[in-house]
Each structure stands twice: as C-alpha cells, then as structure tokens.
Image 1: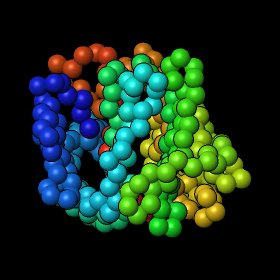
Image 2 (image 1 turned 90 degrees about the vertical axis):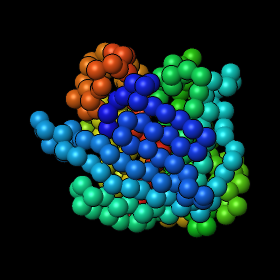
Image 3 (image 1 turned 30 degrees about the vertical axis):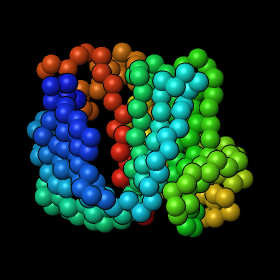
Image 4 (image 1 turned 30 degrees about the horizontal axis):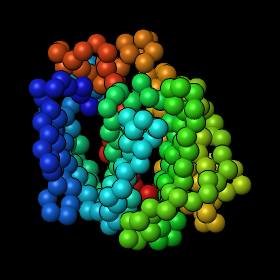
Length: 257
C-alpha cells in the first residue's frame, strides 16, 4: 500500500520483505504478514492495516510462460488453486476461501513490453482455467488459454470467443473469454484509471462459472497525469523516484463468492 525504495526491500530464496510487511514459505504454505497504513480507509489520516494471510496450495505448477519472443517477460501461475485463511487485527475481520497465486518477472519494466493486458481465472469442475491476452509494445498480440488439472500440469487449449465487457467507471476497456462470447459483470472490486478487477458470471468450457477478471492499461499507467495521481492512491516514500510503476497483483488472493 506504499511504494518503497530498494533499501526497504529484502529478498531471500523463500522470503520477501517490503517495508514492515513480509511473506515467507513455511514448508508447504505461504504466510503473508501485513503491516501497513491505507490512505483509502481514512482521509486525510492513514489508518493502520495489520493482519496475516496463510495460503495453502492445493495445486502447484513449476512451469512459467514466456510472454514475448525475446524472453524479457515471464508469467508463472504458482498455485492455480489454493485455500486461504485471512485473519486481520485492524480492521477486525477474518474469512477463509479459495485462493490463487501467481507472479510476473522480467528484465525490464512491464510497461516497456506491453500496452495492455487482460486476464481471468475460474474453477471448471476439478480443473482451473486461466486465460490471458494483450498487446505488446510493438503492436503484436498474444493470447492463450490454459487448463490446470489436479496434478498442476498446464495444458494449452483452444481459446474461447472474445467476450466484451462494459468499460469501467474510468472508461477503461476490458474483456475476457467465454463460451458464445458472452459474460456479465457481477461486481467490480477495484476500479482505477489504469487497472480493474472484477467478478464475472459466464459459461466456460461447457461449465457455468464465476470468474475473476483483470484488465490493465500500461499506456494509461505511464501517462504523466496518472503518474501524478498515483501518490494519492499509493503514497511514496520520500526516496522513491518520481517515475513509479506498480501493479497491485503480483499475488492474487481471490475468494470465490
């Protein structure tokens, strides 16, 4: 919830610390400790956000996917299906449900490689279906549909039809893939000038599903107007460079309604 500099980031083989928050692998589970202040919960005061998330992978996948011919960007669905336990001290809330864990890594900022990106994930019976597509910075398109079985083995399958979705409140385009090219928005959880996350209702690979969907516009992200707006959404430490980049989803912890 705060952009921090290199000196506040520490990485080990099985742990990552960013400021006062951290995540670590403990045997076969991922423990995420949150110690932050959220500007959205109290303006002009930033209220404390403290708690812990424990993710128990039910499926693990060790294969990552190259997103560009040069191999500058990779995407890895680490745990296509997982159980999560969320216990917050401030605010005092807790729940458990279905989860998902993925990550991106690359040799250059992701906005240097891409113009836009759309992603979705859904349970299809015992399998997990993930679709992703976008436009690279050179104008070329990429798209893929994956199904993960109980062993975690990803299988590339034929892409369903494009299912357009209504633009967000900020006017950002979004879309997904679905049978017959139709999907409806249940709720939009996150709506910003360059990023949106939503819950969808649709039919996918012959099954009625509730899907988690994301869209991001990297063109909007690098727009100077958006860059100047970002500190009001995500405060920066004083030593952070003025050119900032943030995608709030290197780890996705999504509950199925």
